[in-house]
Length: 123
Image (tube, rainbow, N blue to C red; front, side, top):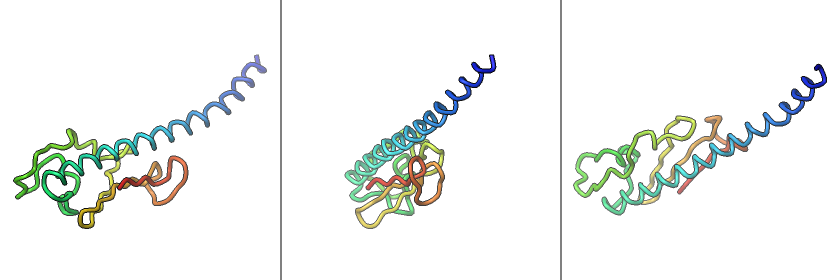
């Protein structure tokens, strides 16, 4: 009986870290796909309005029309939750002229990192 428990413990010691690593990779992949979807929505907005949402308007302009934007044809996204990364933090949106960047700081929420903690940027 003790040998069986020891074997199960050894198997768990090998399988659990690998499973957690896969979950982290899956969340990172989901974040990148989600950010590409939001980037496509920003480009649709820019096509209708003539420029991406300003820094003041932010990504909320993809869901509700900003004041004075008569050319707005949205909503470009359905739910506000789409503006958050898989770790429930808002996406970081920066815009300079007609160029925009979306970023998430990964699982750790801090700049840099490796694996599931690495930053993800979409332009």
